[in-house]
Image (tube, rainbow, N blue to C red; front, side, top):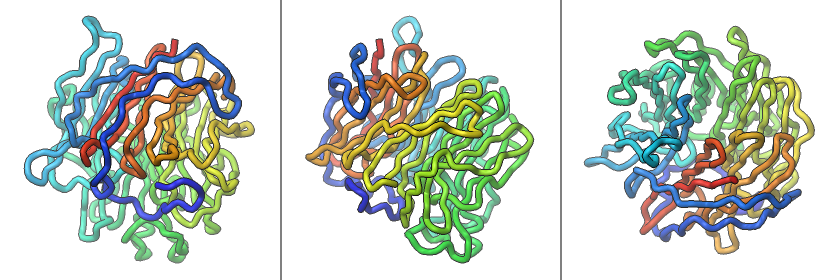
Length: 439
């Protein structure tokens, strides 16, 4: 990925195609002084390397926080022959003796994983102790025909159910960019981008590339609920026109789950939208803010959201003003309306690919930047609940170029932020982690 507004957004590409010839990564950097728009000094954060259980060659990490406080890390790694393994491991940050990773368990091993640098598998835990996971599976015959497989484990990940597609079997085209939420203690909510109407119009051979909507057909956002038997309890279309390949995100409010994503108009305006589900019906899509970013192609850079009660915080990437920016806004009424956005980062160095979590009485946002030598920096921003009192920590310098760094993952427990990302060493992907002590 290059800097500036003339970036080659185009189609999502396989991770392996961008790794060859890249150099080894560098260790996490020390804390840098607070910097950036509106930043003020805070007590220095301490960055420490966090050893991960994923072997060399691993990529596409996901990091989730379970109800019991454990961190769940999943990743894809090479196996025998052409097989890949989707693995996961648990980490108890407050455990005694000192926390250690559990032995990795296999969620799935197969040859038909569809690998995409931005569209990664997820692992998730519900309050009843069940684990859920998804991955992308090639469904053929076209290269861009792939679907979302969903599985559940009731025994801590030792065994998993048979995978079920979340969309009708035999539907051509691409489906992915999943977000999970806890609809209840034992019921999973899931939203995803779905190309069934685009495929029906003959436009399923790839992600949008700036052409017309093929008679109005576009990628759409859909959602469903799944019970403990992995039976679908309901399924809904949420938005009939979205970006093809931007990540989605969700959070629970007192009035139900909110899902944020990047929309798409007939005029190619691609701003962040939000919908809410009260357990019975979904609201109509509305803009978080009308940036009016017009771009004839998917930027592969979706929004992120967290919530507490009826307060909702959203952060997103935009180039609406011609300069890359990370923006953020807050709602006091579960997403019905948002206050004026603030700019968290701005400049041609900003790459986006955001993470967002609540931490104590504040907010943490992670994003990637590009340095003058084309290396990348992983940045952690700290803010109060009104997006003020900003401080910046440079967590790591990556050797990866372009999309090889994928999308870093962020979680927080107590006074510590936990980050996982993909870098490269000797031309192969490698996962790295850091813990950032905030006090």
